Amino acid sequence: MREKQQPLKFAVTSKGDATSNSLMQKIKNYLIDFGLIYDEDGPDIVISVGGDGTLLYAFHRYCRRLDKTAFVGVHTGHLGFYADWVPEEIEKLVIAIAKTPYQIVEYPLLEVIIRYVSGGKEARYLALNECTVKSVSGTLVMDVEIKGELFETFRGDGLCVSTPSGSTAYNKALGGAILHPSLEAIQVAEMASINNRVFRTIGSPLILPAHHTCMLKPVNQVDFHVSVDHLSLLHKDVKSIQFRVADEKIRFARFRPFPFWKRVRDSFIAD
Ligand code: NAP
Image (cartoon, rainbow, N blue to C red; front, top):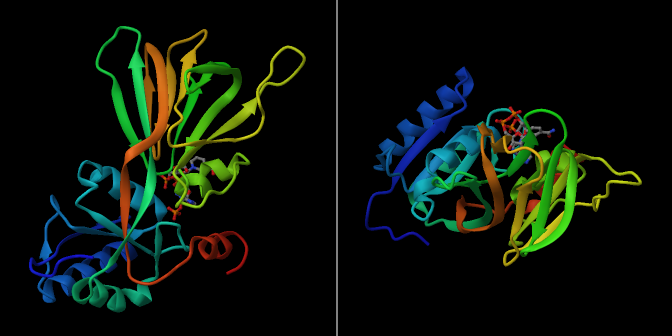
């Protein structure tokens, strides 16, 4: 629960289309009228207006202050997993932000560490949805280690390692399971693995607990396309890519119950 002494500092991010921008302005004006302080650099709460993609951008913008910032998402398109408020509810939402102490719900994140053959500084990323690894040309060939032991040599289009809340995104399209975000786990899903009399992979998505690390080690090439949520980068001279449940978590401000399985049903099965 938030202490009420200090005025709350907030920021609003928008998808950038006319509808989201005008809603962003409305939310900003309402909250300033309620005495809250607009602070783009150090907000206590970030209201993301657009869709799940917009919340991914907001997460990466504020990912260095996750312990101090809570997120809430308004969708101007279809129902999202991170953006679950509709524009018609914004008066209700701003009053709730301004007047009531809110509950915080935390979701696990994925930590990605890329180390280089040259021994230069390793790169560390946090993903809210997932990290994917693909080859720059031809088949991706990687040794997959789990908890320091060789598990398999993967050959195929790529690998996707997702968080529980990201399990409904790219991971789902790859046939991965949907994980409840209260589970501290990561999921490794294959993209079109080669399986025949010579080459073997497990073929099923793997779900690893928080104390298990997954490490990918290149077999024949060292340059890879690595995506972290919406960001995609070419990494050259790669020695290993390590995945585990991050110590950090994303914090969502909750003003009403909206159970995860109801969001799954409303998004994929019923309106
Ligand atoms: P985008 O290609 O513009 O949008 C990807 C779609 O994924 C959007 O409809 C987005 O919802 C939805 N999405 C994002 N996070 C989700 C989640 N946790 N659960 C369910 N759906 C989710 O790309 P973007 O907006 O920059 O988002 C990047 C994400 O796209 C990646 O993290 C990856 O998960 C996803 N992606 C999916 C596939 C696939 O399914 N085959 C392929 C590549 C990337 P909104 O419309 O509400 O923003």
